Image 1 (cartoon, rainbow, N blue to C red):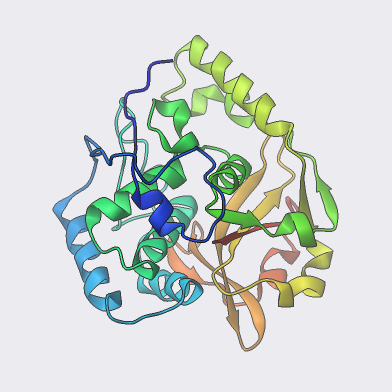
Image 2: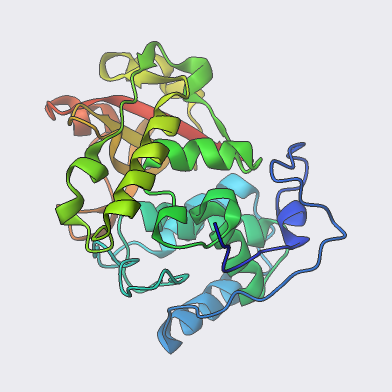
Length: 294
């Protein structure tokens, strides 16, 4: 398969210092190449520069940066499908509007850069690209990590995060992915049967990975093992789907809440009630996956 963009960069290892995992065999000698055709606006550049000015001299830890950057985006409008703006797969940077996944991507990418004293826009977009795309390479619509369990697995393989729920989870995660291929009419990019066939192969491959999750009833028992800034993904019972929502863990008055881009609230916000109560009566939510940026 022809690769349109080869992201060879030393910044990946710098921003992931002490990870101990060069999942794509990327070395410090490899040359950085520019990412072409970024889909963004001048407003996004201004927001990025504002963030740099705020955080450049604060010397926060990684977790502190994640939380404070997440709070910076509170009240930012929730807009779905901001990445699906063109027939051609481009790197989209939209700091003005976001959904639950892009919120997590932007916040954690920015936090990695700022924690490692990297303050250029190129630094940010390279980390974002590594995080958003399989093996960190933009190669069409299917190179994007569409399923969040795949997002977690791929970023674990790249040394970006640990999947904490694999160690503290109490239930086997039966990940039988098929939602996108079974509902291809919902995705304008899937108008080619050959793409659907490739997608099914991806779904089958990802589904073979063994994972654990924390069941809804078990969340209160392990709250103390979840840190501020951890990535929270809500596991769903919807057929063929793995995760229905994502956000960031934030402790308030000793209880675990969710900092997230909310579909119902139409903006980035912190849940008014603890996470356990937030999902308690949602019958299609069975528990959570937890990732921790390294």
